[in-house]
Structure formats: C-alpha cells, structure tokens
Image (spheres, helix red, strand yellow):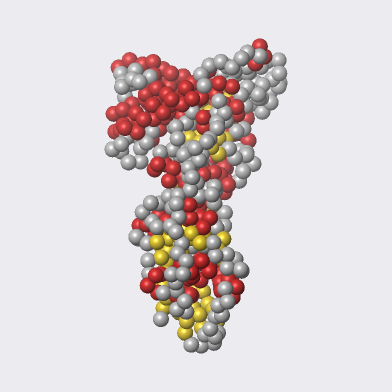
Length: 507
C-alpha cells in the first residue's frame, strides 16, 4: 500500500501542493527520500527516525521510500518533516488512511518528537482552502493560518498529539485566528517644528501613495518627518492585510500568528545589499521592497546607497512587483510600496548655507546628487526642500495639526479613491491610475490644462513626469474634496515636481 498525504512547496508567496507518497516494501532496510529534495529535506529521514523512536515506535526492517510529487518541483525547507512522518505512520497502519486523504501538513520535527514552528503557514492555509483540505501545522503557527476562514486548522505541539488526534484518543481543537495588533502608537507630526511645506507634501503622498524625496541640510528634520509617516497613513484594508501578511509569513516575520493592520514601514541602512533590498539569496527570499508591500520604504541618505541597488528600484516602483531570478529559482513577489527618500543637498551638506558650505559649491552638490540617476529621480512625484529650522522656533511649544487630524483627511481621500477604482482591478490609489482611467479622472479644467502644457514645454517634462503631475493634482483635488481637477491643484502639483530642479537636474 502507498500512503498519501499533502504538503506545500513555496514559490514566493504562493504555496503549491505537493503529494507525499510513502511505500514500505520488502528489501534491504533503507529510508530514501526522492523527488528533488534539498539538503534540509533529505535530512528529514534522520529527524523522523529519532522522533518516532522517542515515541517508542520502531521502524520495520524493510525498504521505506518517500516520494515528493511532482518530482521536478524543487523541495526546500524543513517543513517537510511532519508530512513525511504522518505519511509513514499511515503506511505503518498507526494512523487510519482515510483520515489523511484531505490533509495538508507542514512542520519541522525535533529529535524528541516536538513540532517546531515554520514559516509560510498562511500561504499553506490558502492553498489548502483552495482544495477544500484541512491543515495540520505546529501549534505556534496555527493562529496565523487560522486567518484563512475557509480552512480548518489543527495545531499540534508534538507528534504524539497528532497520533492521539487521528486515532481518536485526544482530539485537537481547531485553531483560532491570532490577535490583531490594535495598540499601535505612532510618533506625532505635531512634534515637528516648522516645515509646513514638507508636512503638506507628506499628506499628499500619503493620500495618493506618491513617491516623495526630501532634500535638506543635516539636522533639518528629514528623518524626523519620515518617522511620522506611519501615523498619517490609513490602516490596511482586509485584502491588503492578507497580502502583506503572506509576504511576512514567508519571511517569518509574523508575531505570534497576529496580523497587523498597520502599514509596513521599512527603513534599510544604506549599506544594504542588492539582495537585501530587492530580494534573493540562496532561497530567493523577499527583500525590503516586498516587505514594504502596501506600506512605506524609506531610504535615508539616498545618494549613499550603491548605484546598482538604486537602479534596480526603477522597475519595481513602476510595476508594483519584482521577479527575483536566480539559477535555481524564478520567484515573483508583490512590492506595491510608497518610496520615501531623504538626501543632503551635497556631500558636505551645507550647499545652501554660504557660511558653512565647502569651496566646491555648486560642483559638490552636482557630484553628490548626481549619484541618483535621472530615470530614478523622474519617478519621484514630490520633491521637497527641507530648510533648517531657526533656533528660536525650537523653543516654541508644539503647534500645528496632530497626526490624527491629518490622518482623518488622508483616510477620507483614500475612501474616495477606493470607490473610484472599485471597478478597476489593480488600481487602488491615484498613483496606480494610467491610460484611459487617468485621462478620465485626472484631466484638469481648461486653465489647468493650459498651465500644465506651458510648464511641460518650458521645462521639458517627460511623458512620465507629465502623467505623475496629473496623478498628484488629482490627489490634491481629493484632499480639497473637489470633483474636478482645477488650476490651483495643477499649480501645486507642478511646484512639487519642479522643486530643487537646479540641483537634481531632472524634471
């Protein structure tokens, strides 16, 4: 008899069903695992042997063959331990075969029979639900998988519990979804003294998911402003939370099975490698741009990042997805993020201050910001100058609007966009609008169109820049609760587009 149960193999955030077949046949005593296993999967036989021995189960002196089908699909990871053990227990008539027909299992085994948590429980539950199957996983991973309501999830702590459950001695209760993290405290925008133009740009960027670049002297508050962006962003929708959590599940970042409604905010150091930012490595893991999916990727000291790393951002910024291509894997990850960056105006940082700037101004600034290529600079919708704050202003009490007040307007604008793009799959915010949809929602009135045409001809806006101005103007109109894009909205959008033009050399 050939015992059969199912597990999954991961391809990015997708989980593909794998049939685990076990045959115990006459012959020399061996334990073979076939079906393109990697080193971790091949070592499963030793962990399974030790776990069964800890339970007092001795393997027969026969030939044991485990086949992972389809055989041409690479099998990677330690989560194959539990399905191999369960399939073997079915083949040995310890677990009834009928109970394993609709089972998907994943989990790593310790030598004493304990089931160790693994990554990817949420995508595995999605795959199990699509096939109307039950999921068996480590108890620590079960709250995460239980968020897929269409799938019954059982979580076990030991292999003995699994045997007791399927033999009817002690049943395992279905797992419940983990807690949603609600008590999230963000830094308040009111703490920032001055910088009203930058705050306005942040509000526009948050409302329409527009990419934003801040240029200013050291200590002017660029990083301080960026750290307050999460406080004005609306919470993730149910669909966005599931998408983001699937990426974080594959990366092993979900905390105790809970799914957060807070938008990701990733801020990698400028020494990060290309694989860390884009994704890759031996197992083609998701990078920072995918971990920031539906959230914010903040790159501080932008010109200090390696040129090769920055150039790899150009396509993901446009498409919202990235293909991590390696010799042994081609994995597609989602990466619809808002790019927020900060830079000094030059290497010394004080190009705008005659008393402190170096003798190489303006060449110092041209060389420094010149590390950012024109095509990448062209992808920033909002470019904001962040001047230094006067010392007298630092002693003033907090003033201006709080993050909660700004967040209320941002949420209202996002709500309008959600309704606007309800019939357009793949579009959620104004930054996603393109083609006929952009023409329909972003075409300004006669005065606004005339202004944009003059500016485009005068400053040589690229086609991408022209369309990005339209998207930003549409967002400004949404914040203004205006159904039509008017000349003032276009003028403000152009002002952000052409800011610091003399320094960045791009439109």
